[in-house]
Image (cartoon, rainbow, N blue to C red; front, side, top):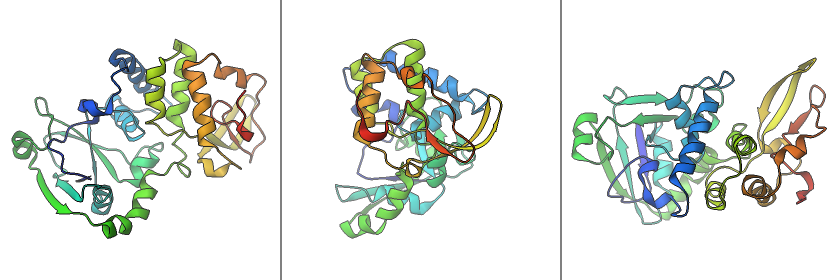
Length: 280
């Protein structure tokens, strides 16, 4: 497994252990409650993930965990490493058969972004947090390689990198935003600080459905990316999510009177798409 890093960082720890990613105004307890609820949601039958795999999926779409991301594709690792603005990059190599728990994140049908990144999640052994520590190098047989990055290197892998992180053609990109909206409707508004932090981290994408079957009150759907819609304005959708999560409005108001369309139609969940750029 390979890990590409776009800089000369003294430590490599899971995102949840990096103080730099947090807004000091965000309550750790509030974020923890939300994260636990989202992990629970992904453990329900329609997703069927275990708790650790659920956390790994959330991390790929913006929420931090103590896990460390890897890839089985060296090209993907170099594409991440080449995003360096400092001119220095590193790649780590860890044997797949590791004393730590290794999660293959590519197999679940909802894990579109992890599949594109050939992603694995490494659950660090107890007592070891830093992948660059001597103990991690010994116990995990980790090797690190440092090399310079030129602008031409970044340009060479630019298309690969964009494909790995794009949201417009990712049918899974909108699930986290929708589930946060449902959490707010069920448990109450988020603080403005947590709202802004989430909006800066997770994909602001629609949840799009292709209606493939319908029988009575039951509807069968496949999911699509925002490129299946006529238009999607991210700044407008950010405004609506801000209003739903910490403002005065309820997203359920948009569900009043909403009906599933006919078989063959493509439609976005009304809580995650507002055609025409409206701001009611």
